[in-house]
Image 1 (tube, rainbow, N blue to C red):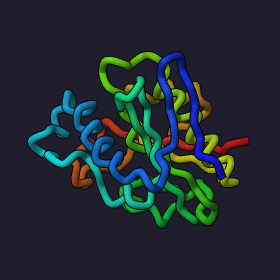
Image 2: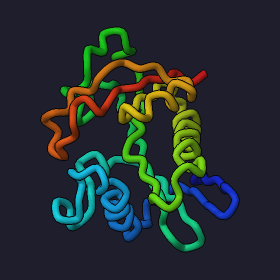
Image 3: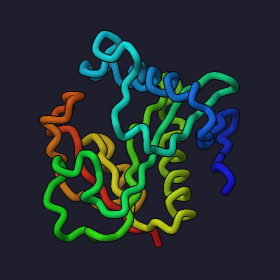
Length: 184
């Protein structure tokens, strides 16, 4: 299967190939650059970049302007949602398909100089296409409260607050929500 890619004017978004292991540390450091204004993901707290156990099994997407890395995102696949590393932080998912494969979108970052250019939306769309190509129709993602409106416009429904107070990167529980979409 060919790697997915997309052009947005001078911006190029592409899937990171499995052989590009040198690109992942740059993505992890970019995550810190893009999130340090929130106060808890800082170069002091994450000198090697912001990464976790979920990165090892993820498909990653990178955004470039020329040769400069300016954005990134990841997608993970689980045979059922209870296999997700952070499942125990999710709300009651009794109404969610428990035994169907799910794609989980996470860690979208865009360099502050390139925000509001449609890059985040393109990363959502490209990862949905990735899931569709794999035959996966259930998409979950966690979003900050200020992102909810956009994801509702993208066809997602809000499943409620993510119980994240114990996740090691210390997010504020009132800031994150779990969103769901079934691809048609």
